[in-house]
Length: 619
Image 1 (cartoon, rainbow, N blue to C red):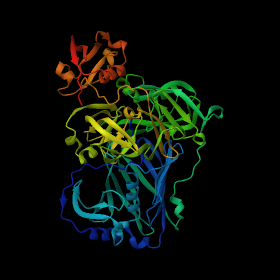
Image 2: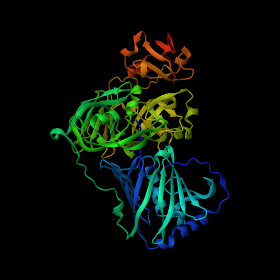
Image 3: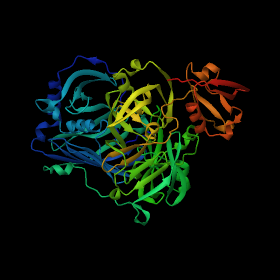
């Protein structure tokens, strides 16, 4: 399950901006250099700033250290209950999360965004060669004003637009595509600090709504001598907040697969157990009712996005301990997110999630065949017999693997919280014209999670690789949505539980290696897609206990038989819906042979009747 949230998530502008005649890039940058105080910067090596933060229902402070020659930087924050840091030393982008772990950020577009940030902080565009960047100039109008706008692509970075006030020549806006969102940062209230002009106020709009705009106010700035290069390196930390009871090297516990999602029991603050979803790329989460039951204080209003197009709002809280079998992690910041609103989609209660912050501390082995998970002390892990090693990098909290799809190089996020086999992002699918080369497919709702339903053109992929591991006959969805996680060009595709369950999977986060050991037993519903032509959920309200057709595929088996979106299924082959699980019915509709006839007793308005659907192979 892809969930994304960020503090300092640079943001978006949607105003129309027609191009006008423009001065040259050189004219714009020469004017900016003079206005910004380039002369006063001569001889200055480092700047250290402090700011006050307000936004997303929280207040706090941030600190930054920047090398004015290279742009290398370290930022740290203490906002509400959350603390952390991130930086770039010219080689590696890195992040220190609120749980205290430090992770190199080399996946997705993380490094390119860090290169962009360093380029801007060092004002490398003032150099005669523009710091190696490609720059074009234009004039645009927005908000009733005219701006000089540079389209900039730094060497090793990605394109962004820099907007300059035509009168003051100060930089007043940055627009930059980050994942699926266009993000906008606005600077205003410039004042002199030792002859150098710095913005008093910076606002960040992440493109998910005005209520989530962040305001950053400069409170202190000072210039320092040159700092050692190591000042910008990822800090060396040794996390000691986790253990396995009795000093054991590992602990193993049973898991349940529901919709290819992993569920197991966990305790929070010694209370429970609760049956949580386990997602190695997600975060530690409890739902509001669980937080209330545990007496936890919730702070903040965070926008959280996923594969769907909508936003889910959450907050932060603290847990003294999180325990899974004999493993315990102490003193954790966790999210409070209404995942329980997805219970009707999952067909089971969802009191919370165990995520990245736990798995970052252990080596995690998922034995999909035996239906067990094992947490292993990293110091005692032996990779012998673990399977084929596949190196990965981190894209945020998600492992990302280099591979191919039908011979096309690709970057795949590995997501145990996704039910699907493979989803390719819309930009990747369009760039490689995959719709044209895969004429046998169907447009359908192919998933449902944070943000609502996700849609795609589902077809059968011939092959893919994850590192050196080759797989054939992959149910592949070509994402079609313009919003949500699959709308971004920062990665190529998402590998979910439908693929991973072909293996025993071991994640070694410390060394950034995933091991894949093929299963030898028979595996249910691999290489198959829904044969009914409908997406069904549990009903809520007065019809609770039945199933509802939440989406229907045009000209698919269900629609051909006369079923409609919104119809309520009360029986299947004469068996009451209340006597079966949603996820078991879904699996049957994927697994039963084409030509199988399924009789649905359906309530449409005040009428109830039987409808026979003949299952059909749709891809």
